[in-house]
Image (tube, rainbow, N blue to C red):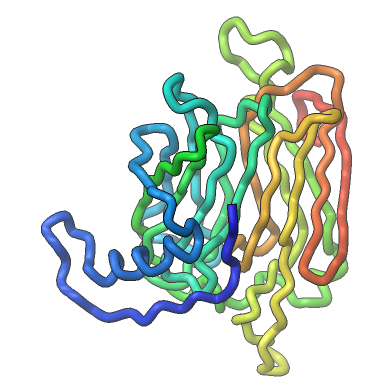
Length: 272
């Protein structure tokens, strides 16, 4: 899938809402955006294949939690990729996640920057190449330009450090560690958007963010990510997948300055 991470800034025009409560302006933004990302591909409704949850009004526009859940439909096959889009962000494509063929990923959560009142969309691609979309509306403002939580020296001192937490499944009939109900990956990185201002120098901080991420177990891919400026500071991912006992989990990441980070952990049901 061709992914557009270039800055696409839409002009907001206040217009009346239609009968479904969706503003004409929002529809116009999405209609002009989707061709840049997906070309002429038809995007159908999700029909439960993917669901999205986010707060209606964000407490912190720079740390908006977004929760995705997937299910496999016998008629459409597994979900092989999902694209997260924030319509009104300067760079609307937040991330593209791709899933390993036998990874069995059914849940994925992360945190986004949301720059203005906007639809947040999840577009899932199934094995047959069809696209399925769901969306939710989030009221937030200024997330992409919000000051960093840490100063730049502090952020650089811990750059690329990772932490992994794994929680064992308690589902009836599940063998120990054959399914992780939740895995949480945390990466120390400022993920600067390029729109934030240094509070001391009053200069804009150059964009610097994690643009590539791969999570694997043994020699099989669990998921990969191509990210943009809309992923929040200190990227955080929580996901569920089909684990295999006795195989380590490995994470590799790279940022826009060419720095590479990696770590590896044995899979066990405790905080690491």
